[in-house]
Structure formats: structure tokens, C-alpha cells
Image 1 (cartoon, rainbow, N blue to C red):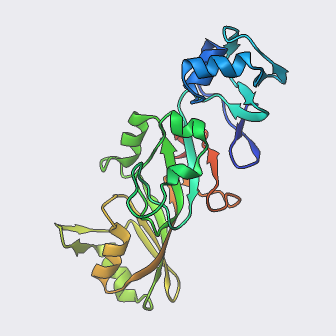
Image 2: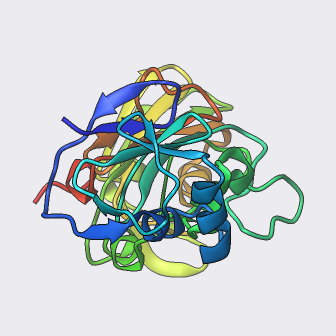
Length: 253
């Protein structure tokens, strides 16, 4: 089985489609290890190994199916398109050009930043939990389009005890200031007196906080635990990331 790497652990990933044969320098370039010249230099300089053996010829053909190469001893699996899960800590912005906090991009290794992964939707700076990032524009659209109704599950800690009336309003629909149409939760469950689990299929600005305010409460802490079919891995601590084995792990059709 091929492997994935990203959180100081190795895990299986399924082989979904036939993969092409590429020159080793093309492999490094496609995975974000620098310009073409820089990738050639890494290989010629003896920094790259395939199947445990150092390769110093940039033109060596490599079968990318299940490929795991290493650069300076760090294993890296080949992905034609990257999809990763990040456990976002509080105090980070989901922006390439943050205003008041560091960008979540600073939590990722250089190759992922170089190849252009972007957040799939956004979490507020003070919100924690599951954030997906990818360089697949079509997948970003698929996962964020309002027509797709991809569910996201949040845990919201509230300032006041959560009442039955508030739960009913969230399920029936509340009206936000900038939208005359009622916004409903797909599911709402009180986990304790002040903690609520909320499932949403839309992605409006500050939606959870604004819905709770409209229902008569106030969010003091917010965490996202699920995106579609994908749950935040229990072993993924804040600030760490891991590969996701394809879109089917998020959206099951």
C-alpha cells in the first residue's frame, strides 16, 4: 500500500486512478519543491532518494503510482493534487494576506505553500478545528457550493444556558440581519448546559455566531469537528496536518 505523511506518522492511502510516469525533476516541481532549476539542483546534489536509493539524475523516469520519495531524508508521497486536513488552532487567519494574526499557511511546510494549496472555506481567527486545504480548484467549488449542501459540524460553547426554545429556533430557522430568508440548522443537539453541536449545510459569514445571537445566546468558543464525511482525526493535535485520501473521504456519493 502507498503511504501518506504529514503528522509524524504514516497512514495508508488508496490508489484511485492510474498515475503517469514522469521525470524525477518533474515530480519534484509538481510537488512544490522549487523552480525547475532548483529541483534539478536538489537531485544533482544528492538530496533526493527513491525507494531508499539516492538518485542524482533529474531525467530518471519515475512511476508516480504509489510513489514516496524523500528529500533530505523526509518522506513525501506523490499527489497529483493535494488535499490535506489541518487542525486549526485559535489565533490564525485563513488568508494568504492576514490582517491581525498569522496565516494558517505558516503552519504548512514549504512544498505545500509553493504548490498553492488554499483553504476550503474559512474559519474565523478564534475558531478551532478541521480545516481542509487543496490546490484543486474544482474540488474547492464542489465542497463550498451552496448547491452541494455539504454538512459541517460545529461545537459551540455559549455564554448562557442553551434552552429548548433556542434549539427549536435554530432548527426552524432564524433570520439574519443581511438575509431575509430564514437560516436553519440541519441538526442541533445540546451536549451540556452551555455546549451545543450544530450541523450546517451553508457557509455564510460568521454563520454559527450570528445564528446563536439571533436565537438569543452568544458564542464564546467555536470548534469544527466534521467537514462532510470527514471527522477531525483524534490524534491530530492543534497546528498539525495530514494528507486526506481523496475527495471521496469528504463527500461520499
